Length: 194
Image 1 (cartoon, one colour):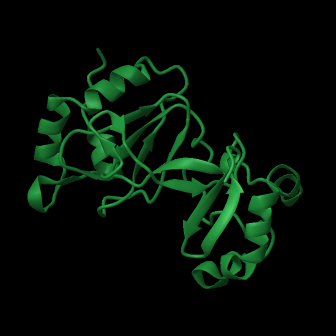
Image 2 (cartoon, rainbow, N blue to C red):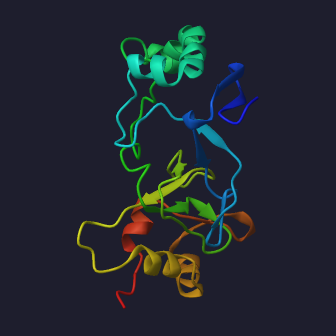
Image 3 (cartoon, helix red, strand yellow):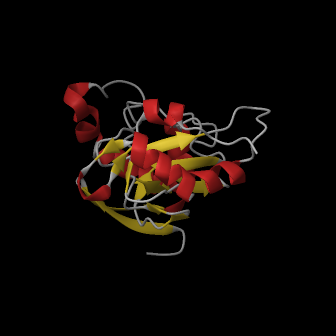
């Protein structure tokens, strides 16, 4: 392993790829605590800064190790979800939710938490997977263009005692003091504008 490459282990085996193909990954409650991202998970990210799938030509020239691994595992990659990945761009993710905003400033919120938790990803260096309130995953919040509230202020509120109190009353209750957050709950959060 050199500084530019890294050994990755996953269910398809062990491979050496370019470090630049990896992006930090928050799967939810175990990676976001309070206002911090503490995760150690990474995902192979075959997308460019705009969220477009990196083409075969670009992968071959810029990331030859990753392309070699994709190519050697193409049968398994195409067979995912009963063959729904067959055809062009078979190395992509099938569900593109969040891909376009992944590399931008945003706030990540776990879908289940024991205390108010939200991470302000200022530089778009962390992606969030498996949205939903089922014990893993999380939500990505992006402010609308021209929004009056700053990301810093929203993240501060989403890690506050006031938010947690509201969530205890309105979030989906789970055992052990956990609260689930889904899109319906997020849409109802009374965010103070000042």
